[in-house]
Amino acid sequence: MTMKMTTKTNTRERSREWYVRAQRSLIEGVNSPSRGAAVYSLGPVILDRGRGSRLWDLDGNEYVDFMMSFGALIQGHAHPKIVEVVSQTMAGGSHFAAATPAESEAAERLQRMVLSAEAVRFTNSGSEATMLALRLARAHTGRTKFLKFEGHYHGWYDPYCLNGHSHPAEELGPRENPTRLPDSKGIPASVFDDVVLAPWNDLEALENILRRHGRELAAVITEPIMANMGCILPRDGYLQRVCDLAHQYGALFILDEVVTGFRYAPGGCQQHYGLKPDLSTFGKALGAGFPVGAVAGPRSILDRMRWGSNMVLHYGTFNGHRLTMRVIAANLDLLMANEGAVYKQIYAVGDATIAGLRDVFRRRKIDAIVQGFGPMFQIYFTSRDAIHDYRDYCEYADTAKYSRFIHGLLDRGIYMTPSNGLHWIISTAHTTQDVETLLPAVDEVCAEMA
Ligand code: PMP
View 1 (cartoon, rainbow, N blue to C red):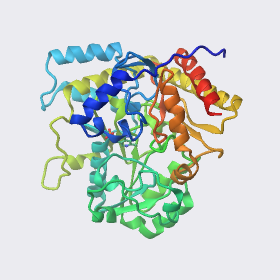
View 2: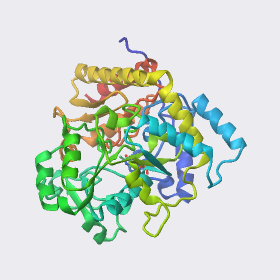
View 3: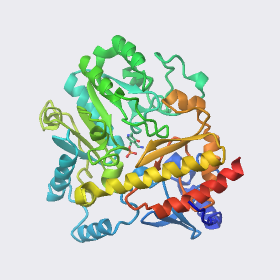
View 4: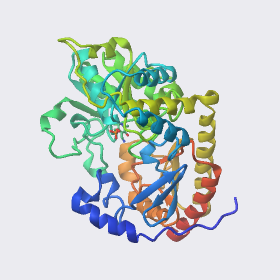
């Protein structure tokens, strides 16, 4: 590929002014620390609008967006069909907090795409979905404890906030008895008494931990592809074995597809890897930019939410939000049009991006690997061949170098979060033209870093 010129997007005057103003009313000027100065060294780039694969900031700089709202924007920005559905729906009212056809229309499409979805319950975020899944699993099994893996993020609900952040390798403790590192203050220590921790991608360690705790567990919850330590793939057959082991001990297997759902295949990673989870959680790509989550599974479990003295409680003013449900239906229709042809396009663009990045790193003699495939991947600056788990990430991924790399790209028309814990996203709006814009920018930054 011949290298094109890059554009300069390092004028940040208006971003800086706005950031000063935002800090007067908002903590760190943002609504989540992952968007603020903890990640963006000079303060956040303040964004103004988006269209397709492109974004514009307040200073008028144009970027190709590879973050895509942490993966929520599977159709890119302002997809014409989504804009049309939103305008039409709004003309008839946003939400009634009462039964509407829109919610079954969304649920029916999800059911058709996700094999394990005998029934569906919509929530308003991925965090709410994983929260509900755990409550259902506890009610269904009559057990309290659950197992989560190191470095997995399932939202900000209290019991999940353990060993979700990276730490220096020497603080992690033994693999089969990890040091317990809460991610947040304000959570009673007793909450974590119900959490069993295990390293991921390591069957031997899991088998040993389950021998000790398996019979106490309501559930084993896992991301199918680790998406909060970049992009870490499961070893061959690993997920199926985790599912079998959970069942062997009478625990439910919860697959957290908040990131991977509707992305790796119409039916998510459970389709891609041939898994049959007891409960699955969704979010992000399901809503194409609108706030939503979902729990799907068999009636025998979801029926526990039926009204009665023994019910699993799940309320919510905004559950089944009419506008969002109409967006979901339109989004899933777009994904399934022409027998899911857009997935071929996403994979082709994603794989070309990955190949192009590897090529630049090789030519520039940069110690970096690209993990993942098609719709989602991450770059690690490391001399290792692969990052297999949280411990590898904490020990071997040079996250400071990654941050410098991304800041270099932000100055050259590429939008991405400088946090190595996230991942690059390819939407249906990305084309090979975007790859051609990306690679010269990467080449320039690598030349500077070498
Ligand atoms: N599960 C996983 C695997 C996630 O990555 C996230 C969010 N990054 C969540 C759950 C929580 O979703 P939300 O941010 O919509 O609450």
